Length: 301
Image (cartoon, rainbow, N blue to C red; front, side, top):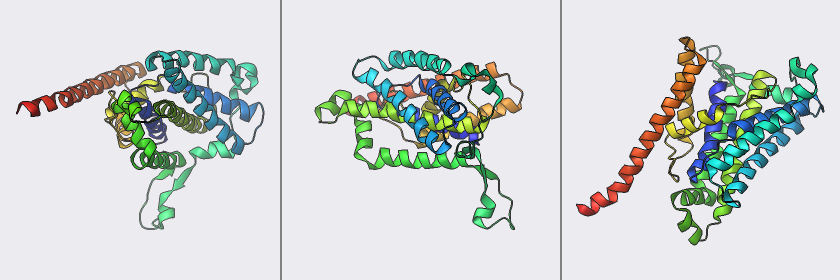
């Protein structure tokens, strides 16, 4: 369940750039950077966990904001900008790697309760007072973190002016700008939210493994895009909500878990993930074409 949780959080973060007609190929690399920041602060500088948590979130937000700045102010294509930062962030992860700077820490786990506590489990039966009547599964804190982020981001999208601006910019950037919407702020904020979600996912992964490696988050950009698109977030922008990425993440996670239990090799699972993404993109293109043709059909009738 915890594995599904961090994938769902990444997919929710990935949905925001997609909603404004962008994409974030660096989201997995941001996970790696944040994970190594946590590792260094905890094991090299011995910073207390209650300070590491906000610093880790800040690192993710700054990385995401840089992506948005490159897209908005340098007018780079989102694919090119985030592909470049993917390489840069992954290189940064290696350059600050505490595992390389202090090799003796390679086998040293992170024990700070503020960090590892993210992966602690709760007895739902005891909470509900049903432990004597029925046996309910223990649920990790990371699952509740995912639910909290889902609720917060869903409210942002559906009940705030910023959320309406997200849909407006994704639907028609130029029309949104002419309508007085601060399109630059909206796009940069969308990438910053993606960075925030990557930071939260990194904290969950570090808590789960009690360490961070240079490869943390590798390949998660593909998984997050697949989950978001599979959940109905349109690559054409302006269509989707937080329900889709969560559902897509759990569906994709269920498929991959089933393949793992069947003994399917990891490389084959990556091929299947790519095939699922292609199928989801193809279906999204089909829906877009139908939406474009429907006004003409209605007018002809």
